[in-house]
Image (tube, rainbow, N blue to C red; front, side):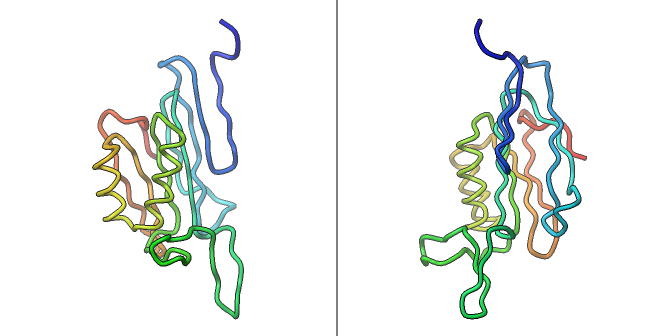
Length: 147
């Protein structure tokens, strides 16, 4: 077999891991209120896609108003949902990335409803703008330890 049979690639806020099923990876999630600190560490199975999106980064000001890069296409403006940061873990990085953005745009309740309808195995860790940590854990999901 050619290539590397075990590895991880960290592309900033997105990570993909691969390797034998017995291998687990420890991933630190940043605290959106203080990027020099970790919010928590999660342990994920190999062959995971971990995507984190935040409205607390990539900011700019226009006429004294702060804007961010997550655009709600329903109103053609930056999203105003209650979530500040969302991490989604699944077996597919693309799916994780899409649903991290959906959660930021739709908010916890509507985003979770959409995610469960199309991808019930997703695991989601969100931080509200008020600092509340919300977790949707699946019994047979990719994350096996939160801490």
